[in-house]
Image 1 (cartoon, rainbow, N blue to C red):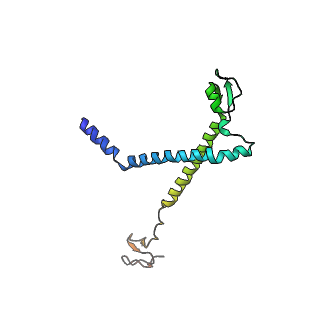
Image 2 (cartoon, helix red, strand yellow):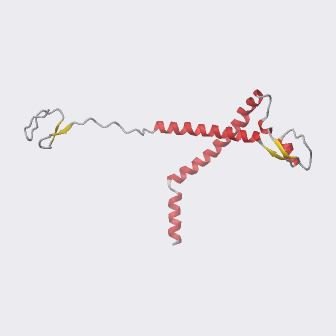
Image 3 (cartoon, one colour):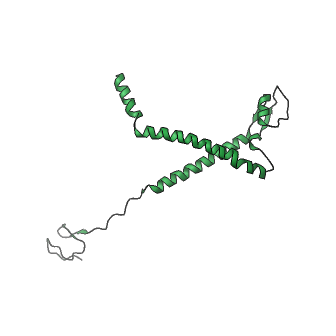
Length: 154
């Protein structure tokens, strides 16, 4: 019983789909880090400059002051070190923008894969035979007289 279970699991684990999925997860994790860096380090700084030198990673609201140090907190890290409870709007915006970029990249990837796949079936070939209405035998499409029953066909 255990041997059959182990054999079944082994067959499942070495199937191509499982290995493909594992490779996809590993590449996806690396891609996620690249996109996260793209958003934090490339996209958000210029947006912050355009909006009046706002650093989105430090865009937060204090819900409850920290016990270690009172407000004002210049950075989110300072608020966390003081033990303040914060609502981190900027980090949330970064995650939303990261998600949109990842979703768009996946959309483009799937669209490209679908374009490479020729999913449309080839057109059906034109018929080269027709049926005689009198004797129901198969005859060439251009025939005007049935060779079997000698009937004239319009």
